[in-house]
Length: 260
Image 1 (cartoon, rainbow, N blue to C red):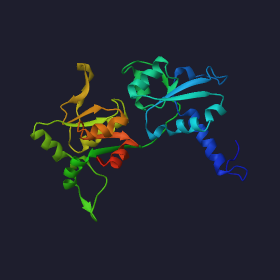
Image 2: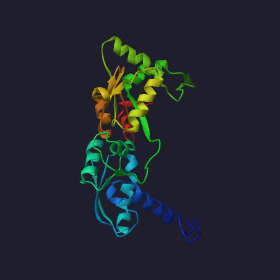
Image 3: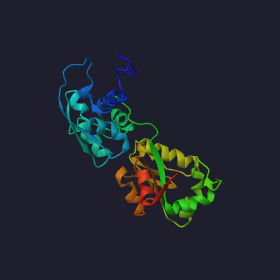
Image 4: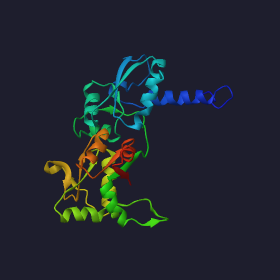
């Protein structure tokens, strides 16, 4: 393998090689691409799906800079409405591959939802999720958060949210939060964060035919597509959410929420 750090290879060249590698393999594709030996591509005209999130950037970079064409592939990319539509598109062949939640290929393999064999060649992000609450909820939480030098002490625990959720319960109002998909890390992370603060996120009971995940819940979690998180928060339908970027910072930009 060539040494890309030698004088003959500029920083731009290194970036191009890295970007080409990411764009070429950062796809969750159907089993069609799981070949024991590499040969001529079975298809050279491909359609890839994505959700509007910053972690789909490798696909966009490869598309805009012509890296797919460099590999003899003619690719179109298409935004999808939500994660279920995207997954179904890959399974039924409408999409040749997609930027996908880590849990979706695993869930499909074990038959959660539609059973299908999906190949996952590359993980596209790491620790990119955040939890955001509305301004009104943040105003109540701040009273319960330790401060140092006039600033909240991080990490901010769900303990600070517990009195707010209890107040909602006393008033007979459900405390609702959004996450992006049942098998998403966002769902797991939000549930863990809430439970660590003594807020029950609810049980799943598929053996009883209940897959809502809201049994005994003190905070009701429901699915909201990532691009719709800020508007759903602003409308008051939910009081907080867990999502990837840019939708946490979008709440800050619009002045409607605070990432915790």
